[in-house]
Length: 503
Image 1 (cartoon, rainbow, N blue to C red):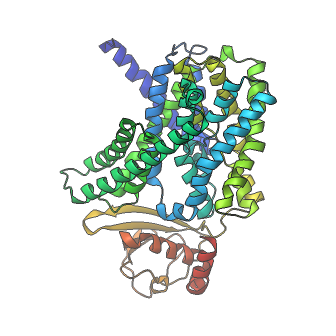
Image 2 (cartoon, rainbow, N blue to C red):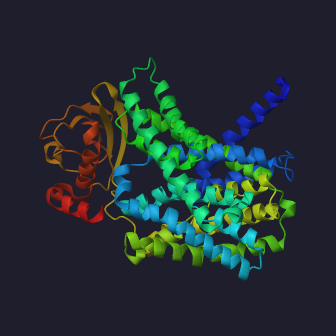
Image 3 (cartoon, rainbow, N blue to C red):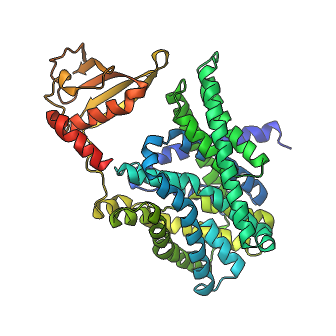
């Protein structure tokens, strides 16, 4: 039983750790590393080999890990643009299903025949390491401007591939896979995915219908309501023995792309909550590790399994998955290298730990070491690999910064646009921007002074523009501003053709 004194201590330590973790984000960003590595190491430092906090409850770690993953997936769905994902949804779904199956098969075969691991441990190793991790992938990809088809495919894959792997690991860990056979296992996975997706769609569209008609007394209730609706999909799917992860992601994806009140505030709230979930999740997983158990054999297995996954299983799974939506080899190569593994594989190892599977502790240690090593290898190199493979989106403007604030009463957004020294918007008249009908530049801030612009007002480097745009036209307004920032006055002719080629 937790008494008041213990609660006070927990609040003190938890607040200090959370604050350090938040400050560590800046360090990890500068170093080009996913912040998960710093959080994992913080957990190890707090654990039995460091400060001495004891944490060995695998069942609690399993439950908390799944709760954190649900929050992270909900945030991923709410902040993902369906317009950006839609062109690559076939490849994303293929990577999350066919790609996962191939990755599991190749890693399991390699672990058994090359590394000499038992069959059950080999299959579990293949299953837990097959999904990519959204938090790990996009903490690095945010600094790399990529074509929408690439980011869309990676977003779809990382959001959808947790569901089938959770089902597979659970079936193997509980022995149900051996009892039911391959066909029955595939049927169970198929049911959970389809039913979870349908329940997620129901929660998303039904929730959007309710939210558009609800008049809540406080704007702060809207983010809570939207997240609750997403988790309602998770709970409904779990009650129906379907995939809660598929349901929560799909429900959040629908809600995040619906025209709802206070949408920007909802996304900001979800992003903050997801950061908190990531911090707690990674620190907890670090606490669960006992560095004293790590020996040269575990490190050797981790390095060998990582080589098989990174250089054999991942490229092969991407190549086969791309049959449904072919892409140039350079882009497929980048997708292959961008398959970062983060907290998800480590969380999945808590399932066999909780079920008491033989060698489950060895699996946890192996996967932990493997994630750390190969995240250090692939994460910092992603920007360079993107440049070498020439997949960096050259049309992505570096001379324009856009921030948005909602104007809920008129269903519009106020964009703050900063014209940097490299932008070709310098010298362009306001009338030459040719924004979509209904959007307008309402104010120009220059050298600390405000200017109410006219049609012939000339824009300069360093100007801040306040642009009001109807929400339904926001993406067109931002795209037009980016075209002018890249091409200047020639955007009327070059921008449209260029955007169609690179979108």
